[in-house]
Length: 441
Ligand code: ACO
Image (cartoon, rainbow, N blue to C red; front, side, top):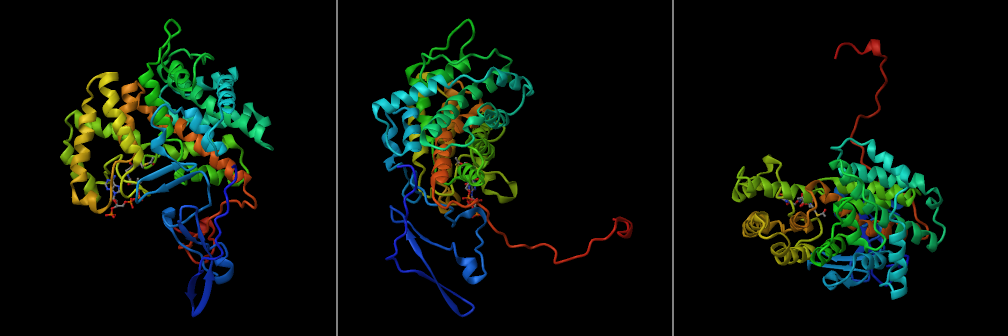
């Protein structure tokens, strides 16, 4: 199933909008899990009014058949499958296929996709020189976005994706190459030689090999690390219309190619209120660990609006009960960190912060719970991923979701360019004054 199915239920009673004494019936739609929406797509034509919803908290921008979230009950499903069912022995490759193509891959599909991921892992040698142009301390998210965009220069044949086979190759190229780009960005920042992908290795071990091997010493990926990393990537793989995915869809709606659209998604993810929060969580935990501030003082600061400080890794636009991804990551962190790296004082601090916040009326009343970023950084750190690469890891994980949404939109009949309106609050008409007539400021 590649395209979103229609959610229209003509039997539902319409909503009635009364405006200026006149009634306007508005169709009501229902999704496959019973969520309802008032269809306002003809509102301006019929009434001359638009809706205003800053932050889009009440706005459905599309219908989609990819991921279902029920934030009140802490439910997250990829193509109908509960996220908890991916906890054991599922690979990121399998989940990427599921999200993009709508069903679990058969053995043959899985092997072919894995082979594609292996054969597309190399970057054009010309791209290597582009890494040299970045300063050593360049933010890896900037490099990632720039290099994903640059891929479209090296694969112009993939700008127009006419059929599923072409799309499958473009998707496999992107999913494969993003980890090479990420690893090269890291190696460049450390002044280390680039390590070529190893065709004998699967997705996660190959990535860690490119990150951590030396020309004289191969990194051997422990199975615990492979499993933890697969789970981290899987838990980040899609989250319906979040900021970065909506960005990918918006850019794609103009007809922009897959690479350009996903490069824009990386930029949206970078922000500290979105994917960048995993870096901020670690910095927060380290500040507390270094004794600069206590956990209690930090929570107090986060409640004080004038401080502009937030408890990073807490709160979510959609989850108002618990974030199932955070629960799964916490469980893995509790199990694996003692085995991988011994005790981690930051894990103790995270537990303490969570206890303090979850018994505090401020957080209880606002339904603020740990989100996916709260425990992911601690796990990534245990695996050896440096803090400035955390959001890059999120981007590698989220890429299949971006690709699935880009394709769903690309396939949908009658797609329109995304173009919101606004309520203008600036000057009424005013005249231009020539410079000499303006007087002193
Ligand atoms: N710490 C302290 N107060 C918070 C926090 C927090 N982490 N999150 C929300 N609040 C408060 C707000 O100040 C607001 O209080 P008010 O009602 O008194 O004004 C209330 O809770 C509602 O918050 P909003 O900002 O309206 O929630 P919104 O849905 O817009 O934002 C967001 C969600 C951005 C995730 C927010 O909770 C936040 O900033 N969290 C910290 C950053 C973070 O962890 N981001 C990662 C999100 S998950 C992801 O993107 C992968």
